[in-house]
Image (cartoon, rainbow, N blue to C red; front, side):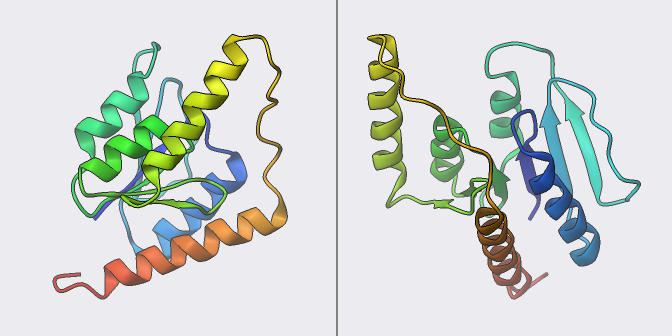
Amino acid sequence: MQLLVDADACPNVIKEILYRAAQRLKFPLVLVANQSLRLPPSPYIRSIRVPGGFDAADSRILEEVEAGDLVITADIPLAAGVVEKGAFALNPRGELYTVDNIRERLAIRDLMSDLRDTGINTGGPGAISKSERQAFANRLDQMLARTNKRPGN
């Protein structure tokens, strides 16, 4: 199992949680971005830089992801592709996207996009709160603990 991160939009506070988890649990952590990233020195953490362009990082993540991997993203269409491949998708606020909820999330995303296209200001997500950071860290720990209990890990 590997952790893949849609790093361009991932908040730094979430990246720090991921760095500590990868180091502590010796998990491969791959950050995919269209810019250079400053990473802590670790044999478990690496980055993939993709060319700038619409959804370049998303496309690369979908190329790299395998069943059982965990992807950190707030991008709903990317999360849908990840779930479709049998992997897990977790957003930076601690919500796990699943087969059971991804269609609803896509429908809401499309509705909000349609509203914005008509000129309605729907606002965007606010800054990640302390409780959301904690929810993310807790869910990440649950996911990694579940993976560590699998045979061969």
